[in-house]
Image (tube, rainbow, N blue to C red; front, top):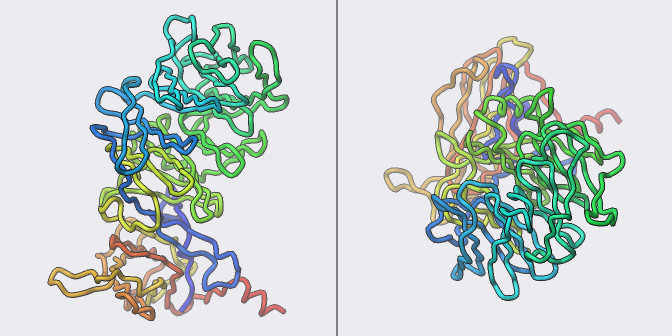
Length: 502
């Protein structure tokens, strides 16, 4: 049997005949030894287990971990609220913030002050006495306008004034009403557009316009301490103001300029480097809007991932720095929807995410094999297999998984008989336009480690695409795939090829 390329990421090209790979709720991991069974394996994305619920909330758009405390913004039909979750049994609502569906952000300093930006309003939460106070953003005598975003660097709170080029800073370690002066501001004038987004990374404050970007550094200047970084001007702007994330000692965002939009960029110093693919960009261009994309980043099992959620399109995507590949985290079965997570925090022990469609907060971990009890549909569609468009006789397909990992007690069929986890196999012989009816492959009950997953006598084709999927709750790990088709060259691992040459 010949090895076929099957364990990779998402890549559905404009023409599915060229490539129509799908990786839903599976992510590729390179076998770093170089001499494993395969060069890359597919592992299941983490599931979600309920941690806490914010009473009466319809979503949890923003979260923040500071000084060992877990803060969340919950949102109902009309307003946003500030919550703290001490543990699953103790949830506190500290009060109403701005109106629902507006942008929100957190920042904190080392003077027991937590700043909360919500729908243009600014609030100070005093951590040592647990009081929430609104800062005046309407009269121009304190903060000089509605705030689009709040951040912190070098002892200063930094406020991005909405719909403007204006940036205002607080006095040192003082975010209270007495710590803001309408004189402590600057106008970002190196580009003519409004400043749409802001992010602090490596003590530099990045400001994005629609066409250009400029980072500022703390120069210790009077009145406003920050100045543009010499040589830091970037000829690439942003289309999604909530998309920037910090990851892998860099900054990533979904960009745009006067030439177009919809490319994911990574800053290599001050040089934007494209990390999206034509396949991902084609997906995004077909969305009703890309401007609403919301980003967060996380690191799990050595994989540093940027996660982007597109609310209007109801889709989510992840970019894995370790492999440079993309995969699609999703919820639901059949009509796949965006992943449930809207925000993320790591509290030093566990990964917590807020639900985009309820007041739930989840633990994201491989310990959970469902999304809060609901099945996770995992789909892998491989690249086209062809022998220079000559007819191939498809004698046998083998999906090589880590079998024998069925749960205890075992799963049961409709008649109550024990069964192993099931994979559904389909194939397309016309470039992914039509598909055969699914064939069930048994993944083996607990302990059946030698079980093979085979499909035989599949006819002939000039080109064929294989797809497998599962919804059963078990660690669905795909090692490789093989095809018995006379005339196909057996694909050996690179180390074995090199050994033959010596």
